[in-house]
Image (cartoon, rainbow, N blue to C red; front, side, top):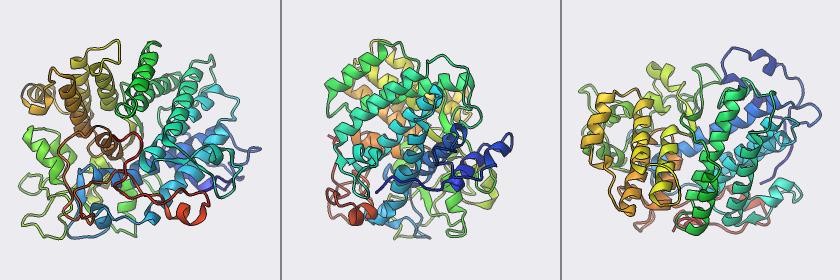
Length: 489
């Protein structure tokens, strides 16, 4: 692994393309390397960072997260993701996402931190914290200090996950503080997440507060005192949290499509539908008579969502399973391309924001907020995302077993994380799997029928990439997929 200057013209063009046609020409008029400090401009670097993050979250992590969280499983009629269901991925599988985050996103974010515009610096710090949380939550200990200094060549040392989290907290707080610096020189349409302007920066502050709450809650089982103190300090600032999704929008145009759809529809995979509905998630939706079921999955000619047990691809089902709905980006049919290609990649969702707040209140770590109202607000935000009627929401709230909030703290946390799991179906698979690793909820995940582990263990991490194993002289050693990361207790 190494951070090095490289030509990212293609990345910039791809990033800007997702903004559509309006106002794009000025971004595409690039004849020099935008990674050169002499020529790079903030409004070229920013969309490049966001497009790269969107690629990792919406493709690489969404596939592993969607399967490990058991929203999806491998289609019996194809084979692309069998090794994921078998818990037998090759380290080389992770070379791409590791390289995208270190050599692309973080490289460009280092440049953006040098901006004279405090707004761009604020976004760079928040995005850097976000990328490092993805890295450390996926892999555990990762290079940080030496990687960012760029002084160790091809072999930066690995930093303990606890120290990585300390940096995440520090960068996030600095980013939040910079969002309030008085200036009228705001990013514009080059901000693919919030669209620029004063409103965009206000949302970046909300993003920072929400992300900081997420990061502190990640420590709930390993260091609850630190988590509590950090959350109490955050609430002392009277923070505003996200009420809308922090997301990147795409279009059904070449180079502009949702990353998962673009790969599934590519000449390599040729629209082969490798992903199908997993019985783990589908059965839970059915048990709660959840109207989101037929929004998040396709139906067959009889109008039914049909699932198969996780990892059962070796057995041909009597009724063909149905697929992730186009709105998730996971349906690769040409007939539904207009919807699937334009599906958003969500960095933090509005439902997640409410459920994070609800958990902080339920644990007694947040001095303000009504846990019942925040819990229901999270469910309502998820229903609203898919334009599900108020009547269906009320029916669900009043009748679904998993929509009830118990009186005890443990029961409340179980209910909150379970509802977060439902809300993240199809869009935030990696985060849902990560929250299961942290809390053990929802307690419905099962061993894949295709597991090759020989035990009842489920995946607890992603594997370090082959490039690190073979090239980094300070590589700390291979980890098994069942070895837990630091905060996973």
